Image (tube, rainbow, N blue to C red; front, side, top):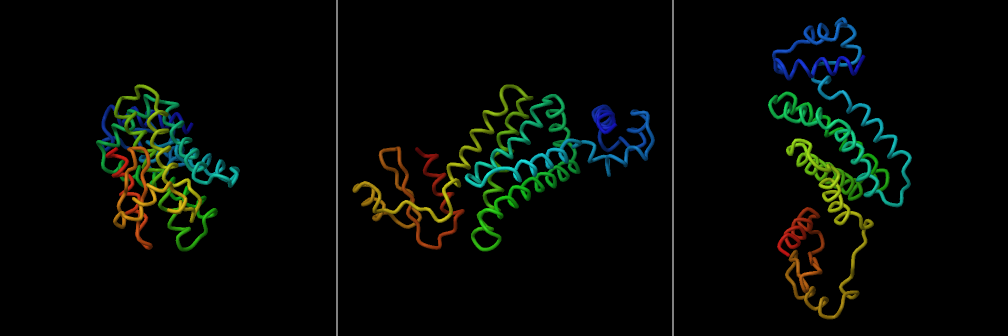
Length: 242
């Protein structure tokens, strides 16, 4: 019944427009009463996103069962659960994407759903990094990075009309997140561990300045207390220039 209602609602949204479609219209198309609709969906906005509650539950279950050896990899894998949900029904996913671009209220609703995914990922990471201080900050920043990377790749696929392999762009984006954040908390590469020429260049570099070595290695030197977002920004700028 949930699927029947969602299909009826979406057909009407495409035919008449979201704003001009009422709950009465939806239940009439589905052949059920209003009570049946509200048993499954609190509002007609919820009928546009009928699969997210199940996906959130699957993500939560996945994270609860995963081991602790690679928390960043775990949340990246959890994000792929959302990707598979979209990829399982490309036509519906593309139509929904286009509809949410046209209806501001749906876009706002979608952002609230995205935030719930982000909070789920951050909650898992806080359990690994700690609830306070830099541990909590790290959890929030990594979760936001994972969601942003996933959505960037997903939207590239949706804007293409669902053509090609959606995993390719998302995997590339999530690999970047892992490359930046997968290092254990507090782990640094000391200058003394670098080859002599690279060490000399690193020590001589200005604070918060990336130094490219032969176009292959980027050494980041920053003053203690430099905000992490600034460090990441400088690294991304250096990598993008290479």
